[in-house]
Image 1: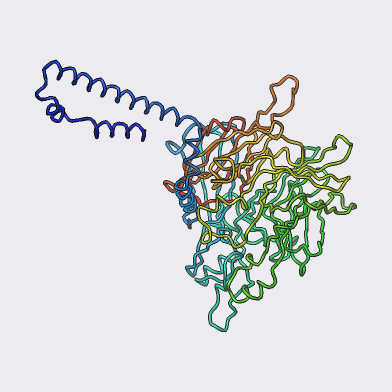
Image 2: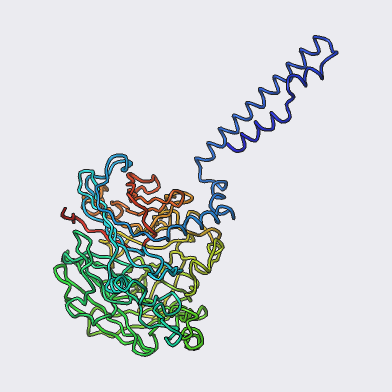
Length: 591
């Protein structure tokens, strides 16, 4: 359309007006004047036809994901605008809602077999009670979101701030009392005699959320979980899980739910602590009816106290962790942290020239742990899935699919980055596959997709088993330039090594794609009679629209995500960029 308008503008700039044309032809014969006018009219009609052709061509081009369209995502101007609109999703939201969404706020049709509740957690407060801006979103106090589907087309939306014990204390005091992991200084420093640093860190309960054994827990990896009422989302308080944990002891924000051969589900989680420079790692398994573990295992890992275990995967026989090559910079602790010049997280140093290690802990308590060098240096936040297989030589292998980064800077925050961050190949996360050979004690790694992505998810029934499809929040373009922020949902076929993609928009940013299985999932292929179609389900993702500062939930058909949402629910409030969520099949909150 811009090209067409330019053509019209050129016509009117250079085509002479009637008076000018008359002056130019004055004195000529009537025949000459008529011929000249005819030529000019023919020329004008040609210009108009060309203008309309350009309009049609621009409309056709807009329908195709061509290189011209890609420029909307990777030009400097587009990247600057996208960064600003994306960053606007990190602003405080304290308002709370509990209402039924209907009418024009629902676009499309909600599938009638989608019955249950989506829970989602993420930071929502981005300044301290003392008014200091939190420059790292990971430090924000958490907010739980609940979106329930009753199967009749209605949707109930509820959100509540997670009133942690620490936040309640601060609200009562009217000021900040606790330090933040990624923020500098002592927020409760009352005089020059007070230390400029603090080791009294706040549990913000902002990372994960799970409903298990009819109990709802908000999770943060460096402290106790917080129990919440699943029907009201009111915070009950910090919970030690019937004294499984000591006060303040860590219970991870990530977990796995695995279906056993007996069709019984197991919740598997872990927690880490430090004993000097050593890591104290505990792994737990829970039956569906209880938060008292049916089994647990403890491992102390010498000199691995700062390997930053955020996530893990599980197979039939192993708990699998990646120990990131990270050390504590003691010199920086003394020279900067103790003087209030850096955050404690900034004292963690990623060693980009060092390989990490794969830790495999047997689920059989009588077997010893295994440590194997990683294939390449990388930093891993999130894993997708893992499974065991036997190769052509008869050797046992553990296959791990994960999202890996070439480097990670713990001092990175909203004040130290700008649009150029998304041109740096170091922090770009891409989908990778590591194969660990248990016979040779060697690991190999391959990059599966060059598209920047995060938050890998699968059909939960495939946890710990061979599988085919993985879903991520992904970049709208492949390659390094403009690899973020995430503006698409990716479905990757690990068998054919092909992808399907739905792009949300230039300034629309999807969150974690939660997979919800369909209730009728039998494969129609006669050769696979009785088997379930792995991708028969729905993808639920919260979208932040940076242009109009609104949020919505999209529902995609997991088998046809490239077709876009089958339904979109406009939420009554904007929701800040979040972290992790979970689906509770059949759960509906009491009114």
